[in-house]
Length: 452
Picture 1 (spheres, rainbow, N blue to C red):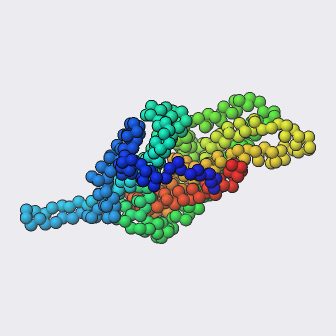
Picture 2 (cartoon, rainbow, N blue to C red):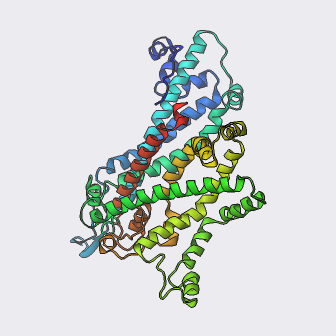
Picture 3 (cartoon, helix red, strand yellow):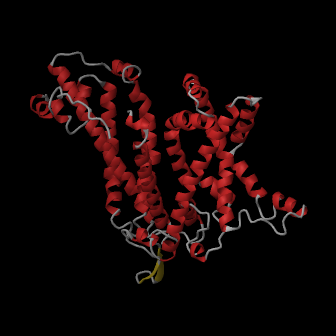
């Protein structure tokens, strides 16, 4: 998948640094930053040394203890009342807070990984510094190091903060969520819970959860495909219509649809939910006009609800595709289109053979992104139907509704009265596996990937 880079031999081996380096170089294999401080690279040396002291100090006083408790997540799992014979009273022993043991254990593992990463970076810096000393080359000062971070190594400066954010707010919570899937953390074990292996994954395919999982997964896939295809085709056709010859006030029409896009999505969805309600303005107007005898159950009939959410999603999704498609259409080569028309091609043939393939070529990565976004489209489903209607006992027993996607079902499992965080985490892992696999498989088939 990735091109193999040509590797150059290192300027010095670690064995050479150890055997021929001075005492500071040797000690730097244990105490980070010493060799840098000896060579007056004050800032780099202090950062390496401080990082090692802080991380190892924290691990020594609490981190290693947290890792050791990961095996049991606490020894007391339930509330107990025991008789204290020495004081002649009953004492209440509360269960250990497993969530804290798990949280600090994961944090300690991340800290160990960070320490290993810093040690590897330090070793490379040590080897480079040794080579400069050996060759009597110029050793960069602290000011020169700082200047390089704003010049030839600017990418390191720009990437540092985002990488720390990803580590703290994405990687660590992801590891924490994954570990929850292998416990029995649910409404019956809210404080003291234990490791249970793959039991949460097994639950998804058995009992009430098992009867609900496959229908919800099937609907999630259908929804993701239908919503992606309809918004894409609708947006492209709308852009072609506005850009076609004979259409006046093109700017006005574009602005009109941009307004739909500019309105906050949750406002549009809540208004749509009100309009499509059994007792909403649409049904009321139709009944007053005696066009229908009873309300059309846009959101309360299982089949109509699925059609309605796809239709509403088109309303809020088509303007986005229309704007992007308009930019592509306006930049198409008119010479190629005129040549095709001279050869006798009609409008449909021009669209099928020239316009659409070029739009598809540019928008394929966006389509993949939209598919993944629709697979996890929480807002449209939850704000329109709340996952309902709940007409199926099979789904209701698993706390799910007819229009629930995997992501909204996951949310319900963590917020409703009977909570099951372990199963919800397992569903989150399944969603990640499906979307990551689909993204890689689809992206590798795009022309953008094949052409590098």
